[in-house]
Image (cartoon, rainbow, N blue to C red; front, side):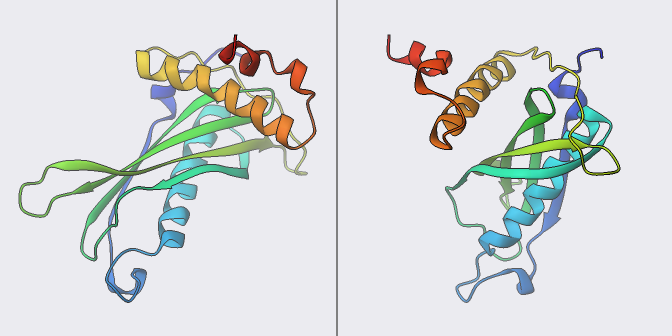
Length: 169
């Protein structure tokens, strides 16, 4: 399989925040944002793998800014690293100022997807070749996150987590 770049996996979803998607103080429900991110991330993972993909985990979500009713919200997703059959997808969430049109980063998230065949069994995915400094930074950090997750789940011995050990040497 030939490597793909994060640019080839880029997915952008832009939409308005409607009244039915807000809490009593007029801000977008967190669950609504999670669903939008899941859709964008799944498209990104599918673009990378060219396979059916399933959400394996929501690794990190940061709700840094409230997103008010009527906001234009953009979710940008890219595959940040590919492993054997799984892919980490990094997302940035932007909101657009109604008057100036300027965008500001509101939130970010990291999801993991697994490529599967028609029977639901994991299948290999192509490697990812990061190009920009940010892509390389996210690529390297993805391995540390994966090792930490495996150690915490008891699926990897801490001494095998070489990327994590390197942080403390």
